[in-house]
Amino acid sequence: MKRERESGQSGRDGRIEPLLDWSDVRFSAGTAKRPHPITHLRRRLWPWWLGVAVVLIAVALVAYRQPLTGWLWPETRVQRLLDEAESALREGRLSATDGRGARQLFEAAQALDTDRTEARSGLMRVAEAALAQAQRALGEERFADARSALALARELQVPRAQADRLAEALRRREAEMVGLDDLLKWAQQAHAAARLEGGPDAALPLYQRVLSLQPDRVEALEGREDALSDLLQQAGAALAKGDLVDAAAIIARVRGYDAGHIELPDAQAGLGRSIEQRLTRAAADLRRQRLDAALAGYQAVLDAAPDNAVARQGSEQVATIYAERAGRLAADQRFSAAQASLEKARVIAPRSVAVIEAEQRIARARQALARQDSGLSAGERSRRVQSLLAAMGRAETQGNWLTPPGESAFDQLRAAQALAPDDAAVKRAAARLLAAIERCFEDELRSNRIRRAQTCLDAWQTLRPDASALRDAHQRLALKWVAVGDERLGAGDVAFAALALREAQMLAADAPGLADFAQRVRTAQAGGD
Image (cartoon, rainbow, N blue to C red):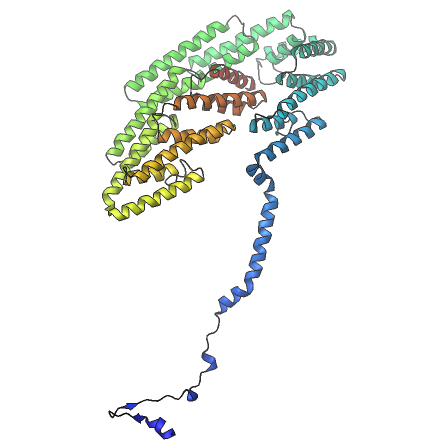
């Protein structure tokens, strides 16, 4: 049998068929597949990695609990601010530059939710506490503290009669305690040394202090008038050098000291003439297409008089010319030069219709060039459109209306429109995006989130620059900036108020109350110089 297996067996046709006896087969244990060392290590370590991940997540949740809570549940954040404000009020921290005073905390809560009454009533109690603090400070002859607390009470609209009574008592008591003759002598010495401003020991602040204590003190009235005349001479020298900004700032400070000064009307008229001359030169530069020189002239006027309508219109004309030039360069496929011209226009008027149209022309020119080179088949084009619309939806969900460039909802939609402008899905996506952007603006504006409302408005204007509702939206957002800026100005935040003024002016230069707000900001800026 063994020989037969070794030699094989003959079939009927003479072939030899091989035979295999499975009992003779031996499998080597050494050839069995073993787990790869790295795979084996991973299997052993994965529980440890899971544990580390759990610990990290727990730490993150603890560290970011408050921010997450504020983001997910705004009501919780408002309540936390109210609780902190009440605590600050109990401790007597009525106002603080770091934002942790009772006033600032109540105002922050009010900005987040204007419908809740706790913040308003809290601010009223802060005003009453400030008046009480001023009364205590007066009794203890801490006059500086009394003046500061009284100023806070007035800012928070404490009853005027109460504030006036306390102010009169403070004035009388301080006049009794402070040597007015010494103050007057120091003011005259500072005046003789030409130290008119620059600190509490300068001539004008000292004259003002004497007059606050004894309003009819003749020497102080005459000294202040002479000092202001000297200051107005400095304004005239600045105008002679063409420095509109310095001259305007000096004149504003003089107005703050004494709006009825006899020489003030002439100084203001001189400033007005200098502004007109600068505007005339800027207009001539604009006609000759010397855009940089024209812009410099208009900007000099705006720095001195931010609400000057002629200068603002001139600047917008410069931006329009740059934007139109960018569109023409893009049509010639000179994209680097087009982008440079567009950037100049953006710096001047980032939200103007001309700038937005130039952006669209450049985008369309790039897309047209890309279509020429792509040679996509119908199927490939359809798949590409579907992919772009899906990306648009993701960007829309994240609120990325205009940024980041190339990945925003607007950019994805524009790319889809370039590939298939008549596609029904593309048209539906455009309509949906526009409606979502309009809702975004209304929701953010209603919630006092003006930065995000601004982003939504920019996207709205980019998508439909000819929409009739845009003008009303611009004005409403401008009024919101004015309201918030006025509130921060009352809290002493002049820098934010100036920012709010610029934002409002760019949105709607003719918004109701904007001119008055601009004047208050300039007065505050002059007082801080």
